[in-house]
Length: 320
Ligand SMILES: *[C@@H]1O[C@H](CO)[C@@H](O)[C@H](O)[C@H]1NC(C)=O
Image 1: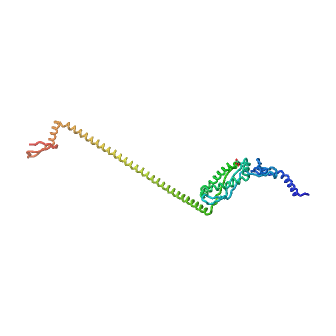
Image 2: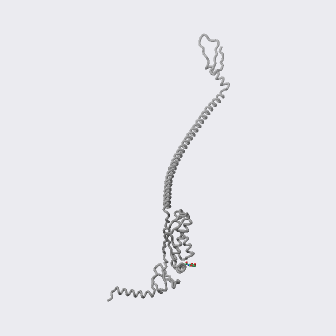
Image 3: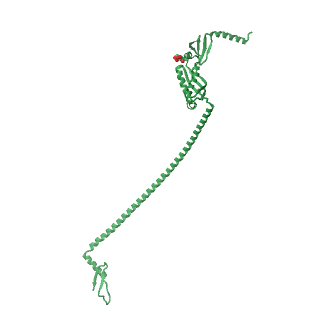
């Protein structure tokens, strides 16, 4: 009785015998199969899955057409100043257009990536280094290196290997000599300190400015109040002046009217008197005054003469 192991082994051998003449092979997902007969590339490709071919006569390889990342490591380069630095890692994300596979393999074999990715990245990095100083490569243009490489590589590929598509490039910071690295670190620290100091100064300045503005506003407020008070005083004085001026005018007016009244009365009286100054009236007055000023002298001794004046100072008559 045959054991199951032996049975399986026999089945396996039979399968091998069947498969080898068929040249059964497998193409992985994300790849296409390319074939050579007698060293000549066939123009047809196969898609993922199992395929057959003539064993020993047909040669077969798979070429990846899905997105892949090629990593180029340890790229040495000399800067324009003569310092030797080394880029540890450059990642190139790329994809091959299925329609260009045959043309590319025909031109550059299946190891096209050696030529167009590894060697090309070395070359471009070296070119970049030789036209820039260490300061530029390490600090100033470092963030642009990805873009620069991408641009240059894609331009070359478009001319020489159309169908090869560049998606992204990532460049790590290069390794630089230890001594120079220390120098850069110190510089960086210095710059950071300076920045923080200037920020502090800025804050202090701003605070001072705020205080100054506050003071100015306060002073202006006080000034405004003083102005208003002053104006009010002036107005008060003015109105007082006006009031007293009016009072004065009133007084003057009253005095004038009083004087007028007096004058009028006097005038009236004068006129009345003038009318009285007739001869008759004067005669009457004279007589009246004589009688008023008559002196009666009683006794035995009558003076011979007597001088009399009337009340108006007129010269009287000499009595005998
Ligand atoms: C292959 O080389 C020929 C001739 O230089 C060129 O015209 C063609 O574009 C190349 N094809 C690919 C896919 O690189």
